[in-house]
Amino acid sequence: MKMEEKPLSGPDNTRLEALMQDIYSELVEDACLGLCFEVHRAVKQGYFFLDETDQDSIKEFEIVDQPGVDIFGQVFNQWKNKECECPNCKRLIAASRFAPHLEKCLGMGRNSSRIANRRLASNNNISKSESDQEDNDDLNDNDWSYGAEKKSKKRKSDKNQNSPRRSKSLKHKNGELGTSISSDPYKQYNYNAGISYESLAPNEVRSLLTTQCGVISEHTKKMCTRSHRCPQHTDDQRRAIRLFLLGPSVPTLPDVDGDGFDVPDSQAVLSRLQWEDSPDISPADSASSKASGNHSDSRRPKKKKKPAAVAAALSMSGGGGGVNLMGVSGAVSQSTISLSTKKKKPKAAAAAAPSVSSIFNELN
Amino acid sequence: MNKEARLKASINQKLTETGERDRLKELLRAKLTECGWKDQMKAQCKEVIKEKGLEHVTVEDLVVEVTPKGRALVPDSVKKELLQRIRGFLSQHAS
Image (cartoon, rainbow over all chains, first blue to last red):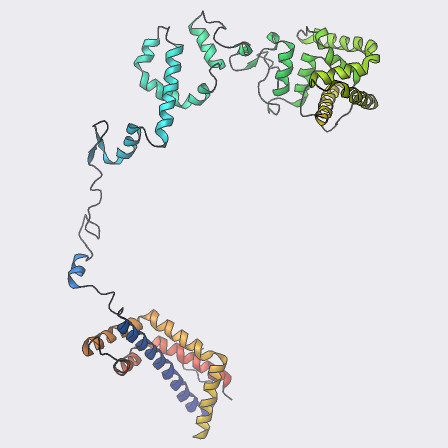
C-alpha cells in the first residue's frame, strides 16, 4: 500500500485525513504521557539515577584500547611461562603443567591411583617372574620405560596370571618351569589358539563344549575357544565336533534349534549316560565308526531298562528327591518314545537334557 | 460540524471496540523504544529534573517540558507506518 494512496472518497477525504492526524497525535501524546509517568515514578522511588556512576569510577573502568592488552588492561598470557615450585617435590614446574603434576605428585585425583596400582602390579609381576633370569638386568635398567610400554597391554596380562602368553614365555625363558607354574586346568592351553582335545578328559571335553565353540581348526588341530556364536565357525561344524568327540548322541549345544523336543531318542540318552563305557574317542575315522558301532550296540540290550536309566540321569543331574523322580522319569521316557519318529539324532540328547533338567527344576 | 463530531465519535468507538487502538498503542511504543526515541526522551527528562531539582519535580513539569519535544522527535518512518495503519482502518470502517 503506497503512502500517497488515498482510497477514501472525495469530500470525506480531508475530513478523514484530519481524523487520521488526530488519532495519530492522540497516540503519540499517550506514549509521551506514559513515559513521563514512568520517569516521575522512578524519580520519586529513587531508582531513576541508579545506572549512573560518578566520574572517578567511570575513569577507572574505561575501556582500554592499547595494543597487547585486553579491554580491561590485562596482559594476555602473562602467567603462561611462569614456573611454580611444587610444594611436594620442590621442583619447578611450568604453570600449565602444574595441576596435573600436583595430582600425580600428591597421589590424589582420579587417575593417579589407577596408574600407581598398574605400575605396582606390573612391577611385581616382572620382578617375580623374571627374577632368576639373565636378561633381568636389562629390564631393571629400563624399568620406567618398560612399565610405560606395558601400560597398554596391562589389562589383558593383569586379568589372568596364568594366561597362555605368560606361561608360554616363561617356558621359553626357563626350561625348568614346565607346567609347574600354571594350574592344572590350563595345562593343555597352548599358545593362544585354543585347546588340544587330545589331552582332555571326557568330562572336561563335555564341559568345555557346553561353553565354547570347540570347532577344531584344520591347521592347528586345536579347539576354538570362542563362544558358541563365534563367527568363524558354523553351527554345523560345532555339531560335527560334538558328534566326533562325544559320540553320536551328545551334541551339547545349549542353543537347540526350533525343532524343539524332537527325537530325544531313548537310546541316545542312554548312550550319553553310558559314557564311561566308551572313553577312548580317538581322532577322525576310528571315532566315527566306533561311535556308530557304539550306538548300534547300545540299542538292543538297553531297551528294557529305560525307566531306570532315565531315573539315573535325573539323579545324576540333580541329586535329590529320589522317589518322586520315578513318576517323572516314566513321563519323560514316554515322551521320548512318542517323539522318536523324527530322525535327527544328534539333537536327541540335547533336547532330552534340557527337558529333563527343566522338569527337574520344576520339581524343585 | 455535527457530522464530523459524530463521525469522529463513531470511529473512536470502533477503534476501541475492535481493539485496534490498543494494538496501535503497543505498536507505537515498541517502535519508539526500538528506534531510541525513549532513551532520548529520558535524557530530556533528566535535564528537566536537574533543572527543577530532584525532590520537587512534578508530573506536570515533565509533561509540559517533554511532550512537545517528544512529538517532534518521533522518526518519520514510525510516523508514516502508523498513519498507514490508521488509514487502513478508516477505509475499512468508515461508513
